[in-house]
Image (cartoon, rainbow, N blue to C red):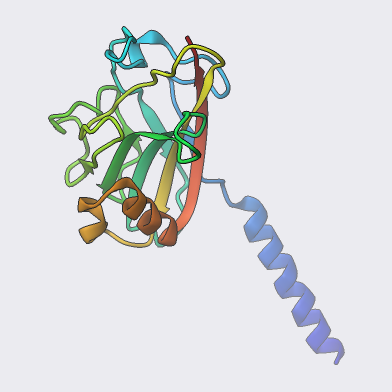
Length: 185
């Protein structure tokens, strides 16, 4: 019995040490600071907004073991859409060795995306990055999220609407990391 308890505590100590040394999956950006105002170069250029509509650079680190692809989504949960929010950017099928999207990766041509990655249609009806452009009033939150996925491709969900893609991404997420910027008019 004493030997069993000793083995048990030794295993628990090892497991705790390994967990304590693990890095957290993290999303950062040289262009977006957590909780701070988003620069006009990343703001949409239509619907009364006059930004440059350039997607910010995003970097992630320490994805969990078993990650087969990534998805990056940009959502405004404060949009006055009756609770659904507004999807500004959806990039899927990002290869597992990628650790960033460079500034401008949201261009509709897709030429600045990692090989194999592609845009899904956002709520502006475009397959590209669509920056912030809230109605006048209180600033909105813009939540950038990178998902580490246990699937290598979204498959048919990658051809569907945002709700189908969101369902598939969330159902296959091993981990996610977020970064939130603010913008108001």
